Image 1 (cartoon, rainbow over the protein chains, first blue to last red):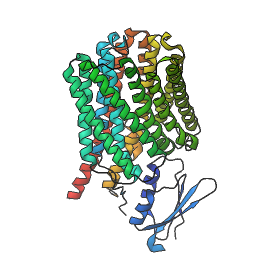
Image 2 (cartoon, rainbow over the protein chains, first blue to last red):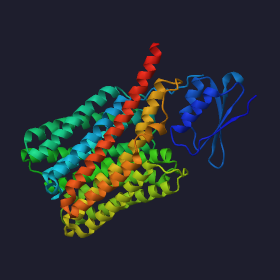
Image 3 (cartoon, one colour):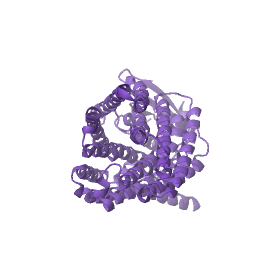
Image 4 (cartoon, rainbow over the protein chains, first blue to last red):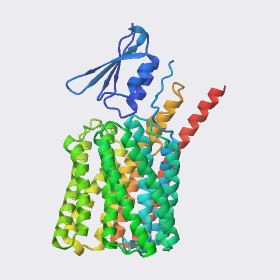
Length: 76
Length: 433
């Protein structure tokens, strides 16, 4: 199984984080996850993930970093 | 490969904002052409016919045009709700604003009442429809955050500006007896310091942290600045109509309050930009920095004017006008426009044609603008225009520089529209095969 795909988008301005994650979703392998590191909660991303069959878990760290784990729904 | 697309269904079609963005630089070009044609005659006074025509071409035809287009697009997305008939509304507001702004410029230049009447009807239609649409939109948007509160304040300022403008136009064309000097002073204060600045401040609260990757604006500022500025403008208006020392005291206190408010915004925004997380240089950041610097300079001259009264020479007041408009306002509008236009082009293409691998990324679209060179030209054009306040002989050269600048901006917006059409054509051809 391939390891997590790390996507650090903290220094990117909109819509580049969305561009990057959409590209990553297209190449995500079975069982693989995207670990997206963001500076804010990317609300527009979530309806897209749901519609396209992905699940996610968002974690907020004390230093203001938002970590979003994304995986295929069928890998539940 | 999965076709991944966006689905902000509340976003109106790209033709809604783009018709405004494509038209706006043409009005800037027309204003620059007036400066070139009239030269020292235009610079003779802020109230010369050519100066009034050029100023209104910029305020109505350029800045209000861009702001209406941006709001028709942004409000449904920011508010997260679809808002009724944006296409029809955009057509009506755009058409009446285009013909109304041009009519008003002709009216100032020719002095013919017919053009004033035409401008009165069309600008009332444009701003009346836009204002009603904005009221409806703000009602539908449930979350009453700082952004919505700021837009309400900007809308109040727009209503006051347009009302004063209509009375002034009626007085100019029909000889209606009004307190002309007071209204002629209040109209630009509500238009620039109210409608335009309040909206810029409100949009900056959203767009600066988002696009320039800064910390958020301090909560004290986002909750307090816009209502305070609005209150000061109301006090300033009262001060103009109260006679004697009491009126003068109210007016001076309100002016000082406004000056402090604008300066607070300039300093806080400058500091946020200096401490931004992303260290990569970006030309839109330069537009903002220059704009904020010019805002601080105009505020300093406004302070001199408030304290010195009529003793301040006309050239200083002209320079205040140049630093505020086209200085501050044009710089920040262009700074925002050059972020919004590539973003919208990408956003609409990505929504319509997901997963086809034909949508260029935002950086590629922005790179075609050559914004760094255009920024250098803008700085020179502004310096030349400021120098023209003291040496009117330079005004035709300033007009020429501004014409090149406006034409370049027009080409850039057209390029984005061209990219959109090209990608759409490719997508349709692929779908047909």
